[in-house]
Amino acid sequence: MDIFLQQIINGLTTGSVYAIVALGYTMVYGVIQLINFAHGEVVMIGAMVAFTVITALVGAGLPLPPIVLVFAGVLTAVPVCMAIGYLLERVAYRPLRHAPRLAPLITAIGMSIILQHLALLIWGRDPRAFPQIMEVTSFNLGGAAISSVQIVIILLSVVMMGVLTWFVYRTRFGIAIRASAEDVRVAALMGVDANRVIAATFIIGAAMGAVAGVMYGTYYGIAHYTMGFTLGLKAFSAAVLGGIGNLAGAMLGGILLGLVEALGAGYIGDLTDLCQWPVFGGLLAERCEADGHVILLGSNYQDVFAFLVLILVLVFRPSGLLGERVAERA
Figure (spheres, rainbow, N blue to C red):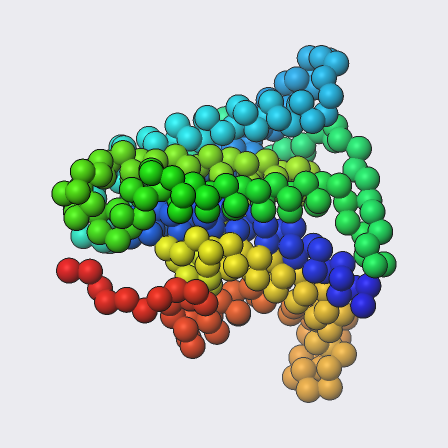
């Protein structure tokens, strides 16, 4: 039971980060039917910028509390990512808004590669370790340990999800976003500035991605110029899992993906040595004799569990868990 509860806590932590990043994907797709594959790199840049600011402040020897250092990193990363999100929409995607769908999709992949290599030029290829400026306190919860960092990540994610939901469903600009999601052309005829709404979805998603990047870097203690690829792919999978274009679906998909990863790695990690299995041990006799063991699954392959669930959902419910089956737009 202790292992189960511990993996639930770990899954909720990583799932909260996936959910925040997935919201960026689902907002853009909900309005203009575009999968912004460069969103993962925006998250990565947010983590890298925060790392740079925090490292510079620590190196300067300023007597600032740890929470102020992290806050300064977030306050710097958010506007930088917002600017990148706006530039992506204005320069790369807006000219292709009426082009065939394959054109903006390829452009998104290209922008992802460009941003990744720009980060490589700026920060180098070596992983960057976040300064250990905060004292991590662990609390006992039913036999499982939950750290102060995990508590902050989960609570902050819940607050961000709640604020975004309130903004989309309770404000005038949120109504414009939902109207544009229904039909951009009709919303424009009703007086909605479609360009402004679409740019805002990129900016809001990028701002949330910056915070998620800082969360990810603080939790794992490391940032790397390739981290956005895997994180973005998982967040996109979470959005598809819950129903892309659906805010509640992105949140649900992110949490479920994190739980599946954690539980799969926690419970199947001890059953990974195929040499100990009678059937596989016989089939892989030469390999087992040479290497001693053959590892197929486990904590190093936790992505297998996440994407296996995604495949099953797409096979049996292609629209996602909370997605609606709708007809193709004219």
